[in-house]
Length: 283
Figure 1 (cartoon, rainbow, N blue to C red):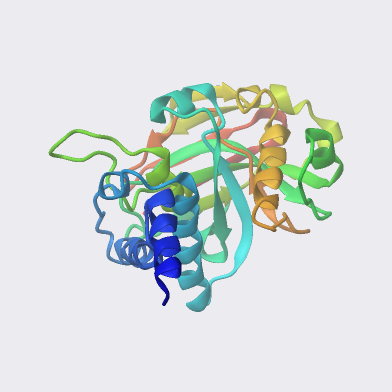
Figure 2 (tube, rainbow, N blue to C red):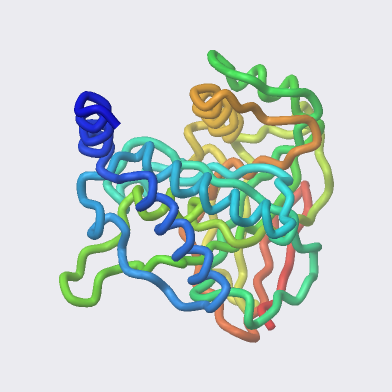
């Protein structure tokens, strides 16, 4: 390699904070952490100058490992869509991850006890897309026009990266969350499919019970003032990578409650009122 090409490669690494082999190593460690249920240290501490683009590169690399193992994409998720969640990690933008076929559980399912590390549950609306959504410049009205229906769901979050560094006390940043596939680990769909013109999505709410006790309530307006805006944001972000949301895919629009911890034996029940409910049990 010529000196100029070497200099260019060095500058590229300096610009984004990680070399390609480091991206692959991080993805492999995340994959092993999920399989062994053993968390890895904060990537944001190991690569303090890495850009958010590198976090998405780690996520994509990890997904390639999963695809090679036979997994299949069924949709996507948007996270960090509420002011409270953004403030918690010090950001002003959402993040996104990918849903895979082995993450989908039916209403009333018992989730395998050996599947997760530190699971938490969120309540949100899932959009089922009927027509391709491709940015840029997608609006919430485009999203509504291309949606077959919305359905209540609970997202199962998990953390393959530690939530905080035990020595310094530093907590996860958006870099860690994005690399960790936006902390996604599962989704439980329930309720009833509801056309978007049959419900005021901003005023759709949920009451989340854990073992019969109400833990949290919220309204979908907490998601960027309308959950369809979160899907539009996702479409426009994906456009920068030459990707789109395809027909039949599920898109989780983001939680409008705080995450609730779940332990073995816990029964989680989210009541969405007129559009139904969704339940799961942690085995």
